[in-house]
Image 1 (cartoon, helix red, strand yellow):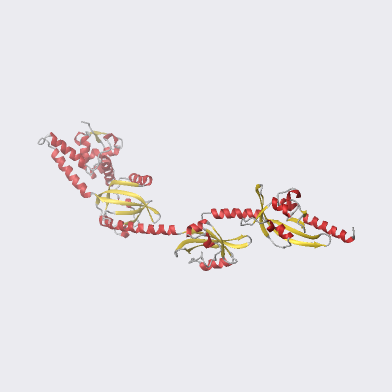
Image 2 (image 1 turned 45 degrees about the vertical axis):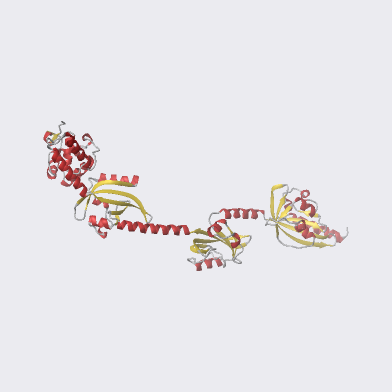
Length: 508
């Protein structure tokens, strides 16, 4: 071998040794298109263990491997990078998908470039340098799937020319555009930052490829209208291009809900103020008054300033705190009470009989209580007068037939405010004491002295007793007791520690 041949052989061997250590795949072809040398990386990038699986020349390669562009178009045999190289074409970074027709799972993405070397001894040599883009391709696939599956509307704008390169179904559904109306078009044609609250900040961040904070904007729609949205931008790279990912939240449903809520609140406010029935709105805790209507003013006599902030329960005549806690517990557990028979105290200290109903409502996103007050004072007075008249007539029934007496008794029962729900043995000891003294005809002062209790406490106990047995006056309480065998004239004294002598009822 002459010196020139020896030197060429040595240089080729050294070059092959160097290329064998490269991470990129190297395939060397001669002028006929035969494979002269292949490194291990090139075999690995084709899923092979030996060069036999790669074939002998570029034509056999085209039979064993199917190449497609990224748009899924299949390459013709003469468009394969190897065929182009043998034809003498020098090219850079041709990206292709490589598949095995007999193996569906075999798929690689290669970036191929070509260079040529000529020598006197070996002739022309074509070097194909293959870079593996498969991991990047899989990452792009995952991003593409996530981007399209994301329910949040989104578009991606390339910063180099401010053109949209991707749009997801969420954005198309929100705006009514078609994909062709977005992809490839400029941000000047469709300004997603239109009417943005801080547009100057957004444009500066876009120019600097920095995160764009959330802000309200209005996107132009195909029909000329504009949609209220919240828009934000996040920088990212797609195939080495700097891009901005814009994401959106549709504000139109919220705006419509807010508008409907305002209309609803306006209607409620008007009906609340114009209602002839007294109404009050209080907080859920402590029942502090926040608003009352005109009918409430007329009934109770309090001005807006006097009513605001005061507790509605302070106007109730309650026997004790237990009764107030029962009302609070009922509202907390059921959200409403209906036709609660109570007395309310007006500004001039007059007690009026009322039916109280209440229900929890949400006003301006706050849970409140709406109270409805029905004044039944005149009705109760009429019923009391009727009961008194019937009682007076029934004291001497010798003038009436039995059927008339039964009708009067039935009428008296029908006009009583509420039927008794308890019997004599269900009364507490204190309630029995009070009832005993009422049957004896004692007034509040005498009861206070006899039981060593304050007059106010006596009045509270009487009110509690009346509600429990379903009466609203002393005469009715006496009648209730007589119907159950009690009579103030038949009570005999009895002794109890720490108490004055009291009488014990004798059952008839």
